[in-house]
View (cartoon, helix red, strand yellow):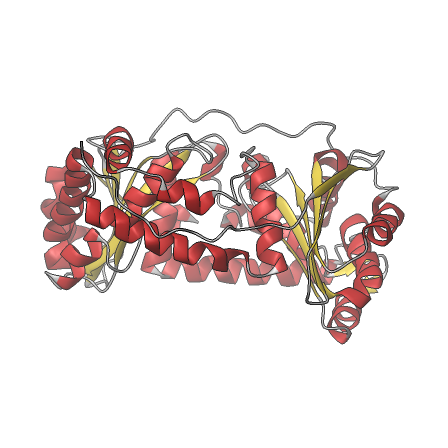
Length: 449
């Protein structure tokens, strides 16, 4: 019987107590007192991200969320900024695939007035016409930059090649056609129909008095009404949109090629999460990974290479990414595909596993240093329905992964033929080189607008 790899004994990772209360209107409040610094982080998470944007208005959630603080309850954007900045606080809003998030960071002594500002920003956004137009120009400019950047283009194309028509394929900021068409009424409709207390969780982490902060919460959000009575549900994913295919985004002027290989992954909280995290760190999740060693160190094909699992509520993807000169693309693809195959067939070695277990365990506490980090970590546990010990026992569960478990996870979840390849570069030079990897399609960057 093989001896288990010895991992250094870990100091207990203690989290502050977490108390949950619910207001009569359905808002769930998570109270996490944490000192000694006199600071408080507040995170409001509402189940209404880009996956739920209606067709024809993709990106409306993120667009609206970023405008919340650009004028509310009769206060202008400048007045809100002056009020918040004066006390050293910050307020911001955005959306991701599944949630709309509004955050507040403030010194403890200013929590009550800053909470009042947050309440106005959330409950009474004015969406001033001038701010809407300014946000439109900025968002379109950001989209233009993305379409000009080969790396961003590759990422956008990969989303299409993997998720296809699934709601996770919707770009968070939307597309050019949608952004151009947004109206003030669209933003008001979004706020009226998709922002509500019954699908919201409020996380408060830092130095505060429980009773005082609950009184402030009730005064600020107790009268909040409307919105959905239940959280929207993300549909099940049928699998890769373009399995086995090669999609080239034509950038004729490029002498280098951005490469992405996408495949099916796992959802957040999957039973194999910890074996997959350790295995992938060996494969491509760190600077000393196999992909970096084989692609950068040994062959000088690229400055960077890596792999990652993107895990969401109902599904996830696995991605290998790198870039190289056009003439080296076949070598890069062969090495990347070969390393995935080698990991799938044999798994990591005992030495590799022990090394990444120490690495991950050493980094993890740093992810919980600030109140903002703690609020985000607890919010993830709640949102994804993870176990109560997910945070406190994370390092121990990483350390408990065996070579056999990591190898079995690789065999089960790393792709064989079910993968999509995305390349951004000179299509004329690439087509003949890469047709051996699957049927080739060519699109223009404008098709990803």
